[in-house]
Length: 292
Image 1 (cartoon, rainbow, N blue to C red):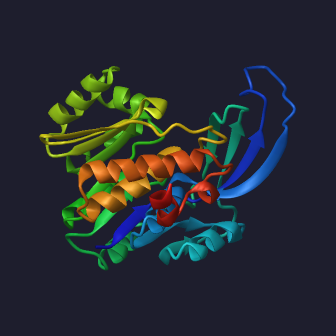
Image 2: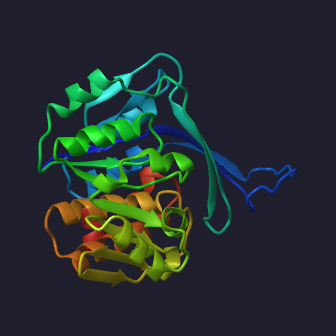
């Protein structure tokens, strides 16, 4: 099985701060680092390190050397990575002393694909393959519809959670991977059990993974339910925790592994990622996860 990721690749400008800056406040940073990142790239690296066969679909600008290097080092297929003039997408992150973060993402109008480009990419894939989406790359709803029509398994991480999410063909999603904020926006509910029930009622053909940070995570698909406690760890940087969990979850579930095993591996992988600084660079290998 081949896995595609129609996702963002960003140069992450990370500022270490005592606390997340407040409105009107000026704050001296304790340090700054530049890392490869973006939800698409992070998730693809997590899939690759979990043992999946992953193809990145995305756009790099003239300053994308650090991103291209990350793709190659992780043996991610780059056949469908487009190069454009100008800058790559980038983010500005604040990471406080407790490892919590805030993120601003910027991508210009060049970060997009035409219908013809989408059709050409999908011609290389077929039913039985899978595709991962976030809400960061332009025209994602169009590509999702085309992929679903071709019979691909659709995994959706609706982040950032905005009104544009409801332009997606959500009834074609096979797995939602969401946090509490995204779950509340999709269902109008706030309690985890109500979010899970809401997704099941609105999208009865879909499974859902609901991540709850230090409170663990749920996975529900039909009659199968699995709760996975969080793995206790000292958090250094939580930036790629959700992306790491998603990558290991998707790889395991598509391989047909038992749901409890998949959830346990994903939780261990995320716990290792948050114990390290950076986004993509913090994601562990499968060997590390199995040995932890």
